Image (cartoon, rainbow over all chains, first blue to last red; front, side, top):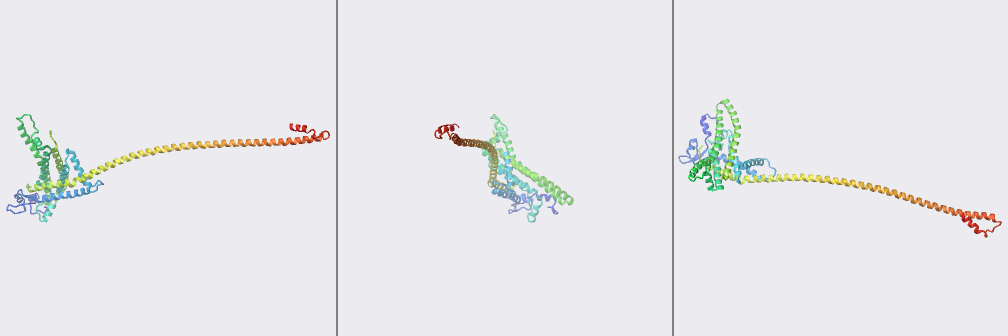
Length: 288
Length: 156
């Protein structure tokens, strides 16, 4: 917050990076944490109200517009909203057709959902960092992180959802045996029965890492990019409390970073969508 | 930055969200787009067909026009021929008529001449008899020499 006379820069940044956490206090009662330490003490059984609120709100926004368009969709001349929605559908459809060779009615809607949701959540990054926290502060809510994708819970939830689908389709298409065979039979192959178990262990380790790396890299890539971007916005915002000259310089920096960030948020959403499609394509592909 | 229940809540939301998109958003839109695509393709095909048909019609019209022109020329030629024939015929008829009238006039003239000759002959016989009477009054009885006078008169 610009008027941060009572906060040092470090406190200001920390304040901005703390989620509004609802959970159980060590003394047993439930409530909203009043500091980052309290939030940490709540352990696993706590929930980030701000992440949930913004992500679900944006999902509802997307759902509302696309559902409205879908209800009114006709083969006639499209107009306004329908035009935009169809543009998105076409874009996603092209991506799916380009990368996904199997036949699965889930993949394209999944890709659209991933792209739209990640993009909208990233888009919250372009809202000036202090605006919504300030408003919520006035309303009495003291922690408010408005960019859900800077919360690792959100990105990992997305990545684990995709990972679950990868496992599901790998087993569904190839069978348990086929999937295990894929994990243990490659990349080292041998006909020697003595070497075979040894190779299988090595293969399992390599392929296992390969498999686990998919959701982890998906989640961390998005989280890292958005977290870093948010951090830079916050650092720029700190300059506003350092006098007129620094304030104006900060304003210019913020504008520049925001414009650059338009690219990043779109790119990250696109990468997440494309990798989702590619991973699912790999899950569908039969190896021989 | 703590991993907590938010993860699971987000997972559930993600699943519901994907389900919603898959169920209510994607199919109607894709269906509408496919329908439009088919419609456009149909429209293009129809346009092409129309163009082709127009070309054919133009060609047909050209042919018909050409034929009509030819027919008209034929009719004109026929008419001209007929007209000249009629004129020819009329001329022939007129000639014939003229000839006929000429012949009739000649016949009449010949008749008149004969009549006049007859009359003259009678007159000459009478005059001859009269002359002879006057000459012969003294010596010849008209009745006794009648046959001679008559034969003379006949010789004229």
